[in-house]
Amino acid sequence: MLGAMDAARSMEGTRSQRAWAAVDWTGAVPQAELIAVEHYAVAGLASLDPAARVRFSHLATCHTCELFIHFERYLIEYVERHAHALPGGARRWRWFIDEERRHAAAFRRLLTRIRPELYPAGEPRFMRWTRADDALVAVTRPVPFFLLAALFEEITLWMPRLMAEAPVHDPTLLEVMALHADEERRHIALDQWVLRDARDHMSPWRVRVDVWSTLPLLVHCDRRARAGWRRMIDQLAAETGIDANVFEARGASLSDRRGMASFAAQLRTLELAGGAGLASLLERVAAR
Ligand SMILES: [Fe+2]
Ligand SMILES: [Fe+2]
Image 1 (cartoon, protein in one colour):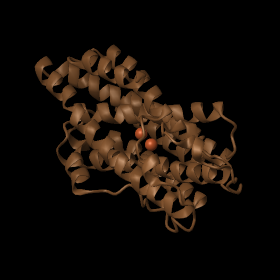
Image 2 (spheres, helix red, strand yellow):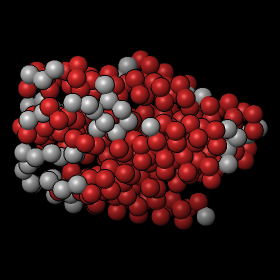
Image 3 (cartoon, rainbow, N blue to C red):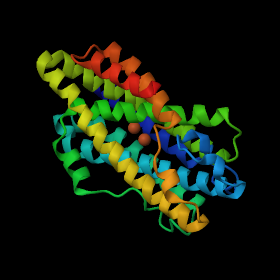
């Protein structure tokens, strides 16, 4: 049985490789909003002239790509380090790591494509990996980690849906977001499998403690994202002369809010001890 599943996974791997190799990268980056600036809950957008809006959108899109790369690094490093202790064993997780590596490579390529002079090698510059990120990977228990993973992955599913509701100025960006979301659906199924396995094998009090220990992780990730946003805004200020302080404070983006709400709905169906409470909290944040 496991052999048949592994064979199916390896076919998936080939399909994924082919799909990413087929992405059309040839189109020039349009001098237009890539992700609409309204996607980001920032005050002061009305004060931007059309050229500054485009520059804002290009840099904010880069920040979003960097966030994805940062989160995918959590996933890659966590699974590489802990796969032997996860349900299914290390071999079952190989395809997951391979897909996340392909995703990170695609987002790096987007960075270089959007702002080649800022990203000659596609390395993130606003999001920085710190020792606190190493610690997160090293010590987080599977339940909070896979809750965090499922929330992040759920948020990424909303990107192509929301982008398609606005005028699409960059087909390549939409194609990458859509292909990424296709593969993330399978990852979310795997996250949920880990969470159900924990629910069925751990004591409810241990699950409850684990579920609520997701909160400090969320706070950590929010702080990392905000620090990256500030660096991005400083770059925008250096390029356009805008007042960086006006754009520093931001609320949850549209994809964050939609993702939190749909993740909360799924969390309820998992029936984890403490899960309904965490779901209510996220729904309140999403509705703000
Ligand atoms: Fe991914
Ligand atoms: Fe993923």
